[in-house]
Image 1 (cartoon, helix red, strand yellow):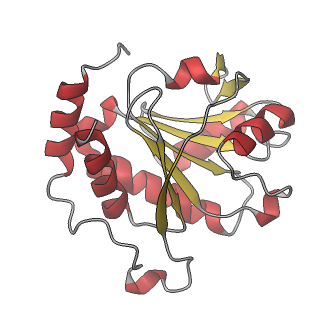
Image 2 (cartoon, rainbow, N blue to C red):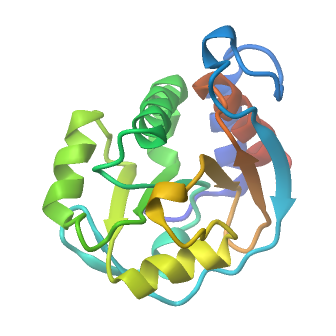
Length: 200
C-alpha cells in the first residue's frame, strides 16, 4: 500500500471513529473489573532492524514493514496463551470493526512472544479465528528478534507467562509511540487513535 497523505489519513480516520463514544478514560468498564486498569503514556522508541516472518510466510524487515506511511497499532501475544491474549486479540478484532472502511488505512500488528511455537501457519489460523482483515498481520521470527522488539518497546519481562497487556499506537513513521498499559475497550482505543492521528 502506498503511503498516505497525512491530512487525508487524519480526516478519514477522524470521520470513521467520530461516534465511538466518550473521550479517552482510564476507568475500565464494569465487565473489566478483573482486568488491569488502563493507563496511557508517551514513549520514544526506535524499532530494531530485525527480520520477522509474517503470517502469510513472507520475511520482512520490521522497520520497513511499519514505515509505509500508515498509522500503526501494535501489541504482543502468543497463540497458546489462555489468559490475557484472547482478550487483547478480541479487543483488536472489535477495533477493526469500529474503524470500518478506514481500517484499510491502518496497520494493525500483533507480534508473537513465543516464536518457537508460533509458526506462520499457526499465526494464520489464529488470525482467521479472530477474523483479522488484510490490514492486520501477525508476526513471528527468531526468539532473538522477538526479544529485541520487546526490549525496544520496554515490554520484555523474561518469561512469556509473565507478560502484561500493552498496546502501542503511532501516528506516522518517526513519531513517538502512545503506550497503553492494561485493558482499554475497542471504543477507547479508536478514540485514542483518532486523537493521535488528528494531532499529527
